[in-house]
Length: 252
Image (cartoon, rainbow, N blue to C red; front, side, top):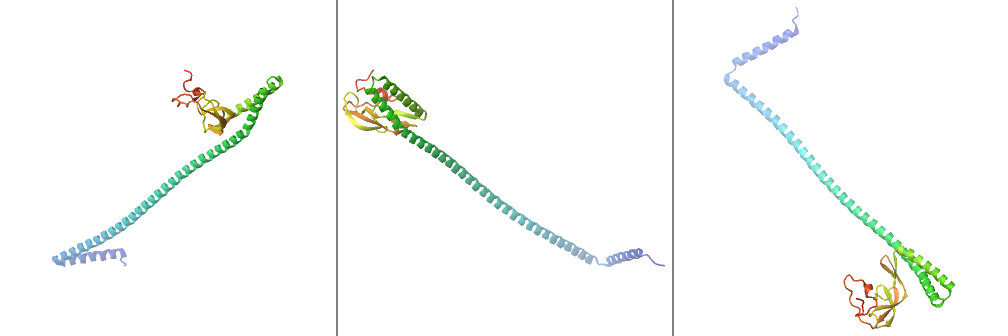
């Protein structure tokens, strides 16, 4: 008859436990206590080693994380620096572009202004010729109706041209009787006249013109001298009120 293997293993285990129980029963109490203490120390040592290994692992992981954090901070600072530099470059580029835009716009405006001034300057001799022709005809052929009709036509064309120029900012400088202004008048002669203030424009040989507040051709004039000194104009007073009247003879 065969004994089952499982039953045999159970019998062997039971026998081993029985042998251990017998050995424990036969062991000296001090020896038993020593063994227990040794087992405890071994367990504590094993636990300490395990804890130490875990602590070292945690410390290593923390060091690695600290390095990663430091690297991330450095990268963030570098990125912020690059962003600040890019922002500064953008501001400079915008300022440069705005300056370039204003400069080119002003250059185009100045170029158009110069072109317009050149055109006006080329037309001024035509106006001068019309004025001289009309003045000559009026003085020498005032009794000739046909000539005077022609003069009227010339004056109409002259006035029309002048009106067109005025729309472009052109103004006539006709300073007869005004104080001489070397910035806007060109003196071509001096005339003694004690009945007007000294340094007063006597005659205008050629009218001047300004454009956009800038004198583009000074008026050619003669200047009176020998009269009383012109008083300093009062603040807010119109200089035209001082025309021709010598000191002490101004209208009250």
